[in-house]
Amino acid sequence: MNLAFNLDLAAGYKNQSQKIRVLTEEWTNTYIYCPNCGKSISKYYNNKPAADFYCPNCLEDYELKSKKNFIGSKIVDGAYGTMVESLNNCNNPNFFLLNYKLETFEVVNFLVIPKHFFISEMIEKRKPLTDNARRAGWVGCNILLQNIPKTGKIYFIKDGIVKPKSIVISEWKKTLFLREQIDVGWAIDIIKCVETFRGREFTLSEVYKFEAELSIKHPDNKHIKDKIRQQLQLLRDKNYLTFVKRGIYKLI
Image 1 (cartoon, rainbow, N blue to C red):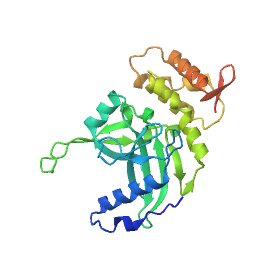
Image 2: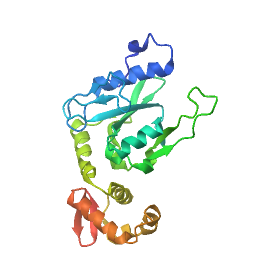
Image 3: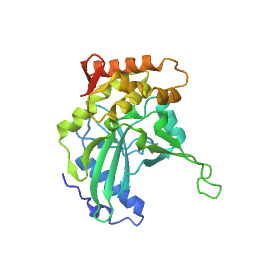
Image 4: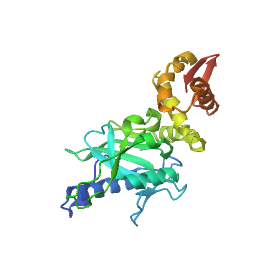
């Protein structure tokens, strides 16, 4: 995999954002595969509003965003209303994020965030554009990367190192069960709690310590500990966690 962009492709463009769009889209189309099935992806050429690529084999959709030098904690996305509508209709695409080094035009990080990790708390509404703007009143949104669990950020390339295809596909399949869940927000919350234990064994009592935090996020639920146990059972049944012994779990 060549991590450098083909700069010849952008030779005819003067606008920097157009150059980057051409370079990143062509690089992605050339080197990135579908993490769901491992097959090649294709580019949408009809300006589909919410996606840039699709997999002809399994029909997964992908939106591509790029960012220079550092990934940061949030990514500027498109129209807030379009994003909310996509989430409500469960037809939002998966999210490719390409991070490149501006000085060398080389890819440093490339990751995918599966669409089932996109819930309302991952989206931040931006202020409307001012009256003087060309699109006055338009409201965009940001994707809050810090609110997405680590398991929801699947790297193809990390710090310039290409990960084996088998690992990328395995990490993708690990959380596909979330697409079947009605309480996906709860499952993601417990996943985030479990990730704080950094892969070590942990006890049910330790997860109960998140009760106050979860009560704030879910004020209508008066049985937080019951919900914690239910979600831990779900994660165990879906082979996300392993049950070590009574009251003790470990991330697989």
